[in-house]
Image 1 (cartoon, rainbow, N blue to C red):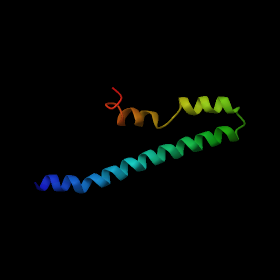
Image 2: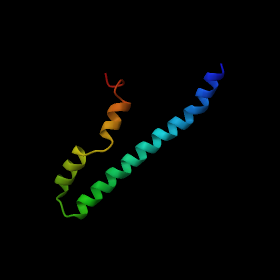
Image 3: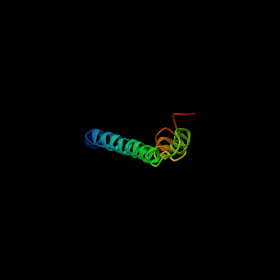
Length: 69
């Protein structure tokens, strides 16, 4: 019973940690896009590069691996 109680105490910490990881990945994606646009690349090339080098793609595969069946 005590282990279950401790699990429910740790649940919010785990959830906020995952939210922080997602926030950092989204920030990196926005910064990458901003830097590409700032370097003078065309918009269609920027969109393709951002799509191919998305830092959250491995995270999404890991988190949603079992829900996309």
